Length: 261
Image (cartoon, rainbow, N blue to C red; front, top):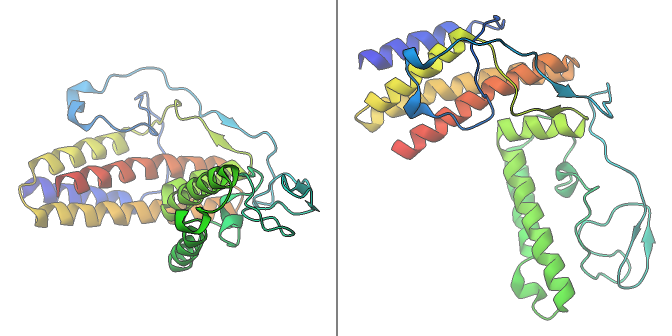
């Protein structure tokens, strides 16, 4: 219980904090945290490296983009200026996956970070109904294979857009910014908080304590998600990347809590 109170106080303090302090501590923010191996004595100093960001094709408008090219049906040869996601507009044959169609386009959503989760879920179910094996069992093997590929892409698109962290990383990627998962994060106070968080999770003996911790972690995750949105829309992409790094820690912590509940 003391650990839980200490954690709540620690998180409450950091909720009011936005700046990132330099340090010589090293970690991999986008890899699964090896919580079981963290201890105060295990943090070793080393030289910090600047964050590497690929900005090839970056558009400063903050809007997502994809390549524009005509789509030609494999069955009837019909050519369309827009990419066909599922069916040919002419013969209605199932088309292969077109990578120029981004995840937002699949669900007919506006290309922005904030979205309506209910609308996403409803459109996901509609797509899966159209791609259900029972509806394509009388098609050719080629079309059945295409339907399976389309279904897999719809599922991956829904999974990516549903969570704040993966959605943030995806929309940055669409804007030409690829986050190097092997780069370092330098913030000793954050690392200490994560270490205390792991200890609190390990020492929690009942679901009430775990749910209390999860509530605090989810609040923290939302806080950094809001910060990401503000930075992204203001085109402060370096700050947006830092927000994603911090979101990663709390997402992993939530996963650890769920496993223990």
